[in-house]
Length: 437
Image 1: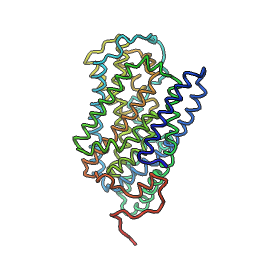
Image 2: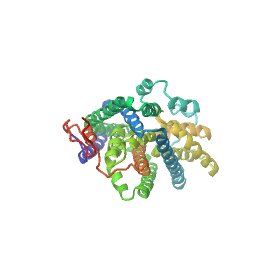
Image 3: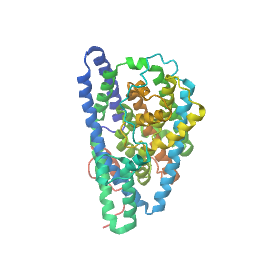
Image 4: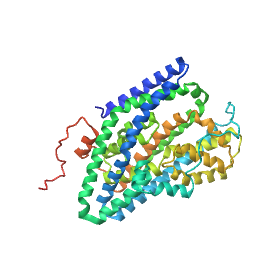
């Protein structure tokens, strides 16, 4: 039903209509709560449909990819290259946020009443200790990890399972083939779910505008404009990094992931874009073996937009309360965030949780988070889209480093059919397939 440019067009239509309907409701309705609740239900349904797919899709694609790599050395090599990129991107993202917040100083002379230092933000500070990180890293069981959609736990189990399949060899071939079939079925389900994306985008945007209106945007307009400028600069840096490695194909990479990026922006959820991002990266030419490994790993360790927001927000709150942070303290904060941000996966409202914990370490009032809660949804839209861009670049770059970046459009027919439910079930063999019987 929706494919190619049509999905992008309908998502944009959903955004436009959402802005209009949300503004009208905020302006004309005395009580927008019922409308917000109704729209929120539609968005929740869509996000749950997407989350329903993610666990089986990550497990199936990652296990098959690792099993077909054939040896532990290949897995370790791809993992090492991925982590080198992730930590480099993290350092750039955190540093950019720190530089911009010091340059713009958005918290100085904010012009609004500050929350009392004893006010509570409602954000539970957790998920930053080593114990909590290990709890998010190693699953009690794969069923538990699947049930709670803990991507990092699913990744850990899939790595062990895939390596074991590779070690067993021919005896595991039937199981690996079955899981490959599962991955295509999950992509087919994703194709069906994407039919509802424009409606979900319309509902999400309508609810956000109906709840907050444009008044909150006027109050925080300068702060938001400066943050969005920082996001655009981060996109530019990611593009430059991609261009250095991919050359002219960097432009086509950004074009290839425009739909999942727009979806993540409109729904303020990078998870919502995961299945579509994986499919688009494979269409772009990334090896399935590399993409199915690097992308879910990136969702745990490479949240570029969220990390830039962490440094930007912490110093903003300090500025608002007139607390001077020395350069040494800011560098210390950056190094701490380099580590604590890696435990964000699976933590509800992860960015705010990390920020709250960081504020406590530097004796900055946690109540300052209340300054951000009113516009956090609009900031999260930019963060989520940036996370998708950052992980797409990482996947393409590692594929290139591994020598497994195919010519664009050279994609298995199975994948095309899986992501487009309008195509028939039968398909011709791919050029490299041979009859076996």
